[in-house]
Length: 566
Image (cartoon, rainbow, N blue to C red; front, top):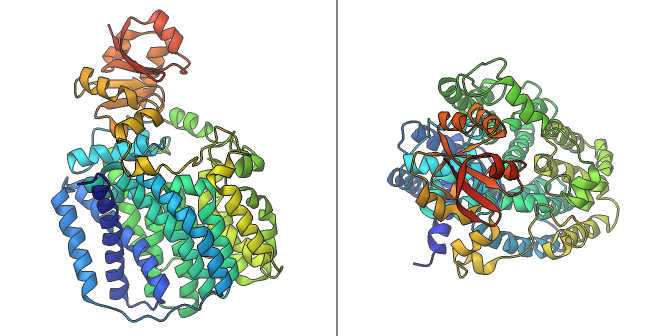
């Protein structure tokens, strides 16, 4: 069997299961939606349902291949049994639709092959799929892994787990790519439904072609998924404002709660509800599904760690694994604003760029003249609040659809401006062009790795060449006994390495190990259960370690070294 077949199956099965679950939910609630938007919203709402179902399976360690396969297949078969007649949305003018396809199709192909290629993103190959790998081994949560990133809500990891079970790492990345694809299509539907088709095309292009959205969306991350889910919630809120169908509130609550399950920061959208049409946000039909999606994650952390919102607010919820000082140090390292030029053009001081066209974002204020414009700007402002804590460009992605639509509404009456800006944005966001103006080290897509995606280039060869630290995998799994801990100052590609890696800033244990290493105290490291060190040549302690620690180098490659303490 060609290696790509299990990958494609894992991703397609996960997306199909989610769409089927959402279709059943929409059918049960009898909400009236148009043809195109119904399928997209079914996928997003169904993803919330599948994510929570897998969460419950993980609690009891029943997230096994047979259970996942049987449950997904049952949902798909059930959804195929019935059909709902739906009216189409108003059409997009032909020239505008042609413009959208002209840009969407090449970007879709380029993104698809990057998502299909072996997963090499820092966080995707690190903690996102590292957590998934541990859950896959156990059929559920790894209760012994009390690290900073294991305690965050893992709604996206629940979907990744389904795809990973059948197609491993790239299948998980393709699931996030499905959210990246759904987002511009939802934006198009928004423009068609609410009378802004040109602004919809413009905003869909700006969002889909944004360099940081592209590389994030083809990786096993969660930022684009958050943007898609929150935009879907906003979309349904506008539909509710038209129809006043109270069952739509159930879907809105489900999606906002799912946003929290994907990433804590998404909960800020609750503050946008009264600004975007819901005058009385505390309604049972919204609050109950919201609580159903949020409380299980809080209960898990309360029981597991002693802190319902771990790894944060440790001053309020003292626990043995994290403390306020560690939390402060972690957050303070994120809170810096690199400047709009870095966010949009250069990407040197912040990983990734939004694209130069977003320097025109102030023009979006002209959209305040319309009700939809005011609501879009309110949602954009609220979803930008988390950037006060973390200004990385990917934290701006949740604001991008709202901001781009507001920009489109503001400038849609200026002849030729929107199509010219859309084409300009697409051209300057293409990987071959990006290299002419952004920083060489900026986090971005640089090529379309077709041979690696189709596994003509062997996966191990591609990973060794492109993923720092992967070269140590054979030596680690040969030399380090199972159950032994490896200390590392920074995150490593733990999604590919079946050993426990203690990272310096991710827990009290990691902090204690880092202090011991800085003091050259091998005895303390051993007392903490750590006998192996993973050191990069660029780490600040590399030379000190070689000169002052009694250790033996047992493997090295591409600037990474593995030491055993004597």
